[in-house]
Image 1: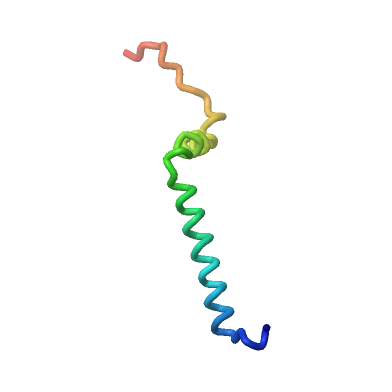
Image 2: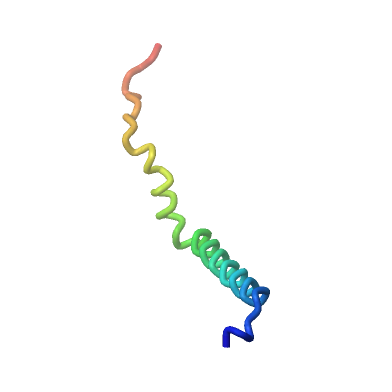
Length: 59
């Protein structure tokens, strides 16, 4: 069976598999259902920052 598949066909199959994987990950990432989880993950670097004290009046 391997004698029937040349290097060009093998590379074409590999390219097709990578294209399918890329498309699947892109659709998963831009899916509306994941928006809230990604928004929360995007704010994780700022979770340890102290919040400014806005109770004081600066005059």
